[in-house]
Length: 495
Image (cartoon, rainbow, N blue to C red):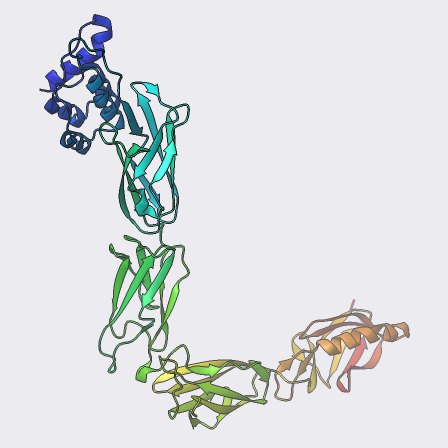
């Protein structure tokens, strides 16, 4: 049979050279040509145009041909054949019919995006200008009436369709402006798909494991575009903070369902749901007794630091998952590198309790803990050193306050000055350093047997470079109000 079909095609293509009329195609042969992968649509249309058909296509025939893949060009060629049949005796040959062929029979667009349908109208092979066309079925796209268009000098008409919000397929038929039918009843299929993942909504908006905490929690992620259409096959990732993230694809409704087992996430913490290109959704994990882990804890103070041994007052609040104050419950306090008073308190009607904190004497970090119904919250405070209480002179890493040091005459040597507060914490010496730099000019302007060669200061140290001009013993005192003293004995240099 393939040889016979090829013979039909060869005969049709060879007609201009031989002058012979190729045999006409019946419906079965035409369908086999359309379903034969060896022939392109343009070749099948050329065979139909040269051979024509042995049958008069009915509406059922046109539908069958479109089903097996007949495009607009094949349909137009088959319709043209109708006008080429031998005219009855004593009648003149009729003109070829006017046919309408869509440039594309299937158009795919995204929800919220406008689209166009292009149609070419010809009589035989001659383009038809100023032909009014209607696109029936386009009212379903939101138009007040079916879209209308008029062909230009090239026989092309352009229908401009509005943006469609909902996904789906719409079958549109091309007719004359007055509603008349074209041969083959040409149609266009408009497919509206999702515009892509733009929104992520998770229900419920927290993770709860039941009253006893022994039942699994279920989260449903809904992924939609900006208009609200569901997005299928979109990967959704759940990060619970422990272990590798879970990843699922959304179903046809745009949903992905996650089941979280008890103990898989920390109580009072949170989990995160995300899709690509969209801001992640953070969900809190319900603490025991229905407390909100995100809304329970210390109220952040205005200043989260203080000097050693200073005191400050803190507030602790607790809320349920529904946002109500957790009044009447007891919160217990403890501290590291600090003291708290009292060590427990009952939440008032606003769900708050206050605690006084006395920072420790050691500079660094202090941690304040609040425990309520097995839910623990921590606040970290910075302990800064106090003001200068004493000055320390060092040489070669050793403290030399009040002692005697030996130095070679006329050879520079270095002393380092550091400051400590009342509790022995090293504290900033920068203000004293600035003052010493300002007074160095006056000091150096007077002839001195112990000369300051250089003075540099930073936040934690002042570096002084000295040089004894003559052999002798000198007292070196540095500071203002609080001072440091060292005796310098200059001896002859060794040869």
